[in-house]
Image 1 (cartoon, rainbow, N blue to C red):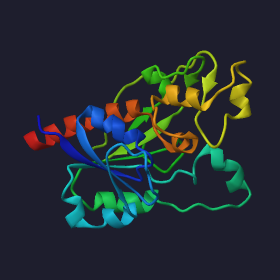
Image 2 (image 1 turned 120 degrees about the vertical axis):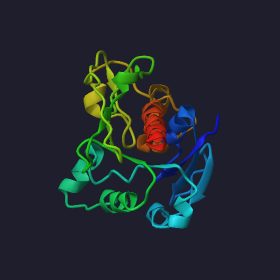
Image 3 (image 1 turned 45 degrees about the vertical axis):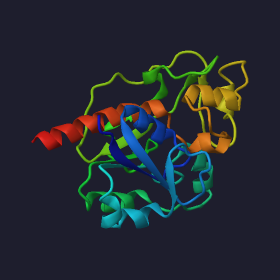
Image 4 (image 1 turned 60 degrees about the horizontal axis):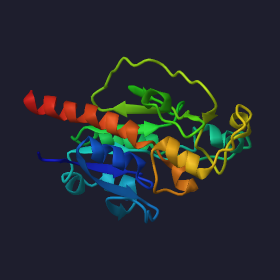
Length: 224
């Protein structure tokens, strides 16, 4: 079986990459920061610059992009209320993605200016640590306007979120068990990242599911 090639932009330490690899892709990551724990081929570069290079993009069958989310995330809300501004990478990334021919997926936090074709959360995949269920909703916009009827979130028991530099007080209040970095790793299904890398990652289970939809789209496009 020939594995498709996927370009993982704004890759971080590779949470999405592992999911796409499990779905059946060969993955190359791109990030402007060093990612020594990225598990596949990695290029340190500006993702938007490479996204504007047709010759470079021609090597890949599909593209995933996770632009920086600090302008929309709950964890940065207090900074934004105090007037701090964050760069908008979603608009420029979408414009460049739409200008090329490969199918693409763009991922970000709830409330980001994305069309939420797929809305995924940890409860949909049974993700949890020893004592806590993962709450980590993420939105996925796709070039093919993907659609799927999935049940909404349903959380029982103490929750765990993975954000910032520690466990928020509102989640600690729900349970007596302290949340550790090991709990984060277990809940996310990621064993190779440190705390800061985990806070920026998506669980591989999400990307594996999206990657399976992407492979179906690629197959149907070629059959048309």
